[in-house]
Length: 413
Image 1 (spheres, one colour):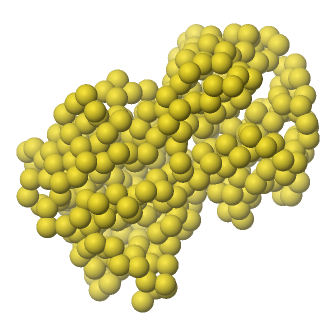
Image 2: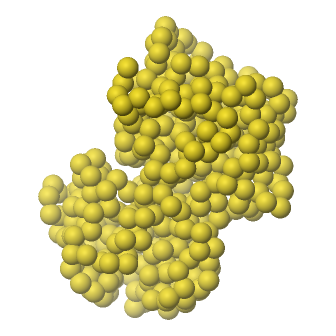
Image 3: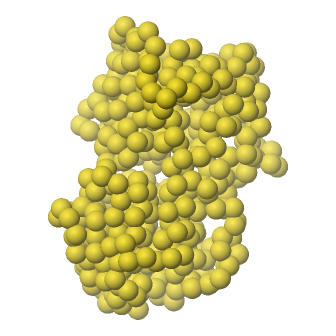
């Protein structure tokens, strides 16, 4: 399927954002580890969270998490401390995403895990048992989801967990988010130094909990506000000013691209104010999920950029570095990569496709980051638009409610 997008003449919208996928998935694991009956409220309705709910509710012998990377990592650790034998698998792409680092760390603690296919990759066969280990050393530049998966089970280990991270620590806000949620569910865990975290044994308590709206989803509405003409006004409901979500830092960066954030009791209100900076150089190591949003936005605003700290992009739903380079060329922008962790653009252009069709690579963020481009490129089309269900199922409905025109075609035209 393909969507042809048409932008509204003016942008005025009030949007009930989806609940945070990051918080929902962590809260579900912590709730399950507590053994309680009070399920968290306002859980995300995205695919990633729904596969987690089904797995935890039914615990089948074979757990298929489809394309949900968070579920793969968190459930792998959870199954290691849960009685029973289970195989966890996913899509073809999921079976190409490395998981050896997490498996090796869990084996260090005493986990019983076998590879059911290719060494180092899902599917995994896991025999739950009591883990006797208590200390792990891990490179700090690995996915924060590996680290979060280990931390969350740390509180149910007999003597807790001591985790030491070496080298450069990426995505620290996601680690802090996990620690905050662990505390909310009654565990004691925290940094003991710049690179060490201790988790005290004792488990979790059954706790009433409500999930905040998703700052990652908010980024696309910031992007629309930045690209819209006139005086756009957008209200985003359910966001907190002092959020533990790392992607809330996106508001600060969008301020440099001319978008003002006003915190209101219901959430935030966005308006245009001033002009974008002439150039944006930023380390995105703490907010890699916003890389696509800022790369596309800066190109369309004609703001040269250099974004570093993107080493995790190559092992996401797709190789996002390669995907961004390929798809932005269709819009007439020539961006460059260095060291598998840097993207930069100095203003170089190329001929744009007459009717660009953006491929989404089974990656929800490719669809959502390129859709706002219709505010600048009226003929843009999004291929396989249904991928947004991974994190923001109502994305297209919300765009239509805000005045965007969406015409569906059964195949590329």
